[in-house]
Image (cartoon, rainbow, N blue to C red; front, side, top):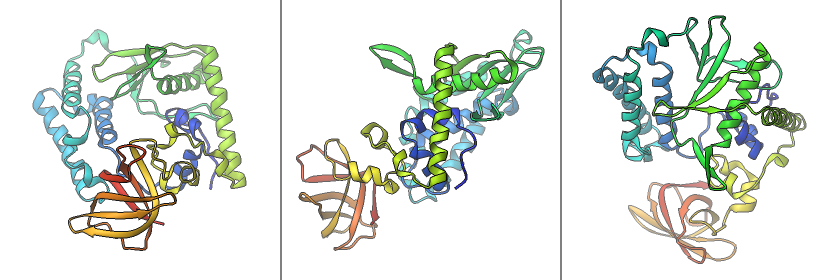
Length: 345
């Protein structure tokens, strides 16, 4: 495996919480273990409109609806042809606030259909351009604003979901996003010796400034470099397991659970939460359209209800079953949900 050349500002906070995700991301680039929630794909479409709004030349509701429908239909065809993703078809039934986000996006796009001349910059805007510091940090912000001299004076990054969190009962911008923008600012400062103003733009078109705190910025940059070195050392020695940080907040929705031994050692057959993953031997199967499986695990026997019959399982199989609903920790009856998947050992 090749070493990591740059730490991405958009991935930094996630990789720092559990660095082995960087390894899995490189190893399983073309594999998907669980269905991807449509919120992610909807976000990609929203980003497309925001980043390309000048090129798209959307001047009316009909213009917007035509391009929107084309994008959604294309995505839904991909979902229907994908065994994992078809559980989220149609997208509008499953993506959070689908209609609201569409309306907000349409309003934002049409608001700028005839921008006043005074709003235009001499050097204009640049969207989705790669930037790096030449050594450790590199990524692609959504938009730059340049002044007459061609210097980057603003960075704008679009976020299509909730951009706030509560810390000590105070509503603040999410730390993940703040770190991302600070690392972008660091890169720009290394090129032009001047910080840009950094904004997160929401779907209402509102810009939320990320203030440049140099102490926090330098600390974040130092931690990013440390993270890069830590990951690359593991790649060099091929000793990846110490990178794992098995913690419930890191693990319970991680897409790499089926290949992570640290996760399996700590959280398989753990019934402390409503959504659980289990491993055991199938000792009985009943039913036809939706089957009932009796599973023997270390401590007890479980009855799993509502499993889809097309799952290729037999009595005697040792299986991992992901994403089951657990009514309470003492329950011996678990229920399949939309995202339930079975994988043989």
